Amino acid sequence: MASTAATRTAAGASKIVKPIFSRDLDEAKRRVRELYRAWYREVPNTVAMFQLDINTQQGRDKVREMFDKNKHVTDPRLIDMLVIKGKMELQETIHVWKQKTHVMRYFHESEEPRATDFLSKFYRANEP
Amino acid sequence: MASRALQKCVRSLARPSLRLLSANLGMRAAPIPAAAALRPLSFAAASRRTRWLSQNPISSGVLCRQYSDLPPLTLESIKDRVIYVLKLYDKINPEKLETTSHFMKDLGLDSLDQVEIIMAMEDEFGFEIPDAEAEKLMTPSEIVQYIANKKDVYE
Image (cartoon, rainbow over all chains, first blue to last red; front, side):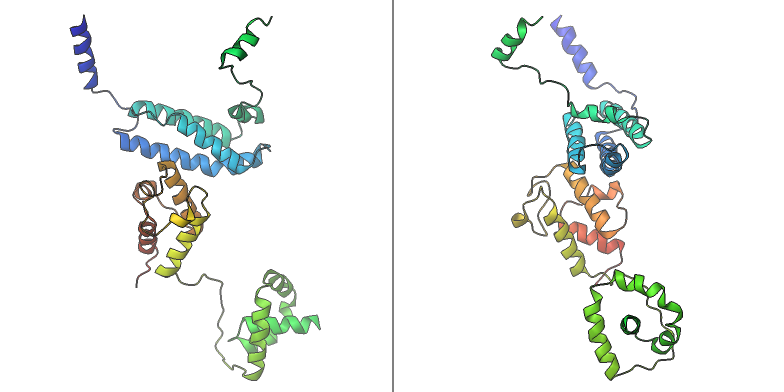
């Protein structure tokens, strides 16, 4: 059982898979940088077009935060998939297919933070 | 009186074509106030130049237009502008910044920070830097060298 699991992981480590867009990690990182550039340049236009109540620096910090959330990824295909999703969001934002509420959803303004310590969970536990 | 002051400004701003301009001043009175309003900083220089001009009038029959163009770039000016833009960036400590300081190793910046820096350079110098070459620019001196190569600045 353990030996078959070991052979399976050894085979999986050297498996050749079909790439989505980029063949290696460098190309994937290049795509990420291009996407970041596009988002960085788009933020002031977004703030003006949707008449958001944030300033450009806050928007850019939020873009950086969304990119930093996936900083740890090393698989080129996974990076490509995330870049594709980022490009879809960018397209929807540029063409104003979204609305103000969709853009502001990134900022989680009306969500309450989840309870992490014991006492907050205790207070919340018996609510109807 | 205002028109005479404006005439003096125009005469000082376009020195070589003195005779022709003074002849055309009547026709050009309308666009001149807009031009004069846009250049308040040059009035002090203009008054100095009018005093110089009244003492030594230039007679040149050659029509010479002075289109607005930036002064030519030098390696020194490129370096000054690059360092100035980097000092304005809030993630860089301006005391630790030198021309040879590596962005990632010395200044502790991210790859996305380096992308932001290159974009600031693009905005400063007014031309696109493609990402394939931008990812290699890791110190201010490399940026200066790249811009000098692109803009044909040599010494």
